[in-house]
Each structure stands twice: as structure tokens, then as C-alpha cells.
Image 1 (tube, rainbow, N blue to C red):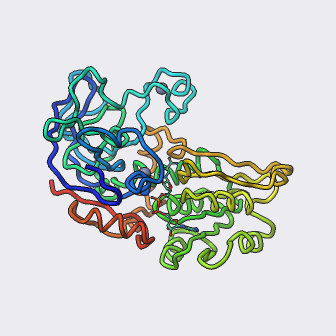
Image 2: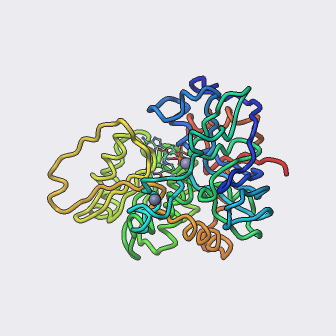
Length: 360
Ligand SMILES: NC(=O)c1ccc[n+]([C@@H]2O[C@H](COP(=O)([O-])OP(=O)(O)OC[C@H]3O[C@@H](n4cnc5c(N)ncnc54)[C@H](O)[C@@H]3O)[C@@H](O)[C@H]2O)c1
Ligand SMILES: [Zn+2]
Ligand SMILES: [Zn+2]
């Protein structure tokens, strides 16, 4: 099913929910670069060899249609968003309050059970155990977060991955302090969420870095105080100059070796660089002298979010007008336009997030 660079639209049979599973009618599904990394073969990924192919889509919203007999968290009619990592609740990391690092995820069905999804009788792999680019999703209940039914479902679609990662990267992983200087490199859905959250928590200076003028303009509208065009030159010099010697926090939201390196080189003493982008397989090269004055480089998986508490908070902040996620949606498209959408992402033409909407 997976041809490099393009997706096929096809029919898939969906099983009934087993004990801890939930069947969701999909209403919205965002296009995130993490799908594209795998579609374009940037690195290998589990499930690419599934006999029935791989079903992508890992930030989605929908309505609960049916639940398995052990499900207690949701019931039919609930409004939900998906989360790409499913926690067990009993491993060391879950007990330490770090569910995104869970080592015993219950997200997939056990191999001894019949497959959740099949295509002409052959098992289909669900990316992130979700498969949000389909009219229905059959998932573990820990893949879902209940949200306020008043919240618009197209916007809800982008919360579970892109917004959670940018928001959580700022408030959880880096814990940005009010008044500090922040730089965000890469202004897609993830980077824009980091910009807006840095503004929400009171960063003093927010420097937005991208190669595309339209994205820089949008970042300024969403809370950035300065813009640096990285299309023709290394942006580090300009960031050092604008911040008077470096930023306290930088966020890399692309997943490239050069921009990860830039994120550390633009820090002031004791500054912290947080890598939100997925740079699997790339070798990072930095002058060890940068670490003498306590600069730090760290990763952030899904913004270190605790889905059932952090995602409803994002919804509340948006409903209260403290975030403005409506402005993140670049365009609403039909499923049939998905390949055009990912082509636009490859060409860096999506200012914000593109969302597939499904009819009810
Ligand atoms: N850590 C996580 O858990 C997590 C979660 C979601 C997404 N991601 C990753 O975050 C990254 C961003 O995802 P996205 O969906 O926002 O992607 P996107 O494609 O929408 O955005 C990337 C942005 O980077 C810009 N860009 C590209 N090259 C650049 C360069 N050299 N200098 C400056 N800007 C440049 C593009 O113009 C674009 O605005 C991806 O690597 C994705 O896989 C990670
Ligand atoms: Zn766990
Ligand atoms: Zn994603």
C-alpha cells in the first residue's frame, strides 16, 4: 500500500471494539510532519512491512461510537481527541508522571487477537496505534482524551500532536520562565504552538526563525516579537544580536541536523535547547566548548504531556481566548486532497496546519 511519497485511498474493514477499546467516528485529522517523515522514508518505522499496509494519521478528533466492555473513561457521544502515545499507568515512567515515556504501552492489540483493521483480509498497521486518516478509528481507551463538547472539532484535531508538542515543550519540558528570551526554529504546527505558548507564559522576547516569509508573518501575529529569515544565511548571528548574546531557551521544530546545531549555538550561558523535531538517524556536531558555561541540549517527546490533564487545559485556554488556535488552521480539505496537502508541506507552503474534515 505504501509507495514512497504518496498515499492510496482504499477501503479497510474495522473490527468491533474488544474489552478496553473504543470505536471513534473521525471528524477532523491534522497533517503532521511526523507522518511525512515516514511516508518519505526519512527513517525506517515499525509496521511499514504490514501485509495490508500502513494507515497514517495521528492527530485527530471525533465522536465515540461504541466502547468495549471494560471501558470506563468514555461513552458513546463523547467528544474526543487522540494522543499518539498510549500509557499503561503502572510502569516506572508512568508512576513518575512521565506517561509519554511508558515502557509497557497497551496501545496495540495483542498479536494473538484478530487484527483491528484489515484490507482484503490482510492486517493493516495503525500509525501510532491510531490511523486517523480514516472515517473510523478503533483504538485503546488510553489513546483518547475527552474534551469539552463546545469546542470546534476541526481545531480539536490539531491538539493531540502538533499543539500538544509545542505547548508541552514550552511549559513542561523546558518550563520557560516569564521575562526570558526564547527562539523557535521552524514555524510549522509544532513551532507555532511553541511561539504562542511562550507568549502565553510571558516570555520577554520571542524570536521566530523560518525560511518562509508567510510563516514568519503568521508567527508575528501569534505572539513572536522578532523574525529571522533563515533562507539565505545561518540565523545564529542574527539571534545572538537580537537577544544581546543569546536566548535562554531555544526550540528546534524541524528535525534537521543543522537546525539542532543552531539551537545550541544561539543559547546564552545556562541556556536550554529543546529538540521537538524528529531527527532520527542524523549526526549532531557541536563544539564541546558550548557546554562549559552550562548550556544544555534536551529532547522532548510530545512535549512531555500528560494527555488527560494537559490536552483539556489547551482546550480551556483556547476557549478562554488565551490561545488562538483558530488561526493555526491553514485550510480544511477533503480526504481526497491528502497527497496535495503533503506535497504542500514538502514545499513548505502550509502556513499553520492543514486539516482533513470528515462529514458526520
Ligand atoms: N517530539 C515530538 O513528539 C513531535 C511531535 C510532533 C511533531 N514532531 C516533529 O516536529 C517537526 C515539525 O513538525 P511540523 O508538523 O510542525 O512540520 P512542518 O513541516 O509543518 O514545519 C516545519 C517548518 O520548518 C521550516 N523549515 C524547514 N527547514 C528549515 C530551515 N533550514 N530553517 C528554518 N526553518 C526551516 C518550514 O518552512 C516549516 O515552517 C517534525 O520533525 C515532526 O516530525 C515531533
Ligand atoms: Zn507505562
Ligand atoms: Zn505529529
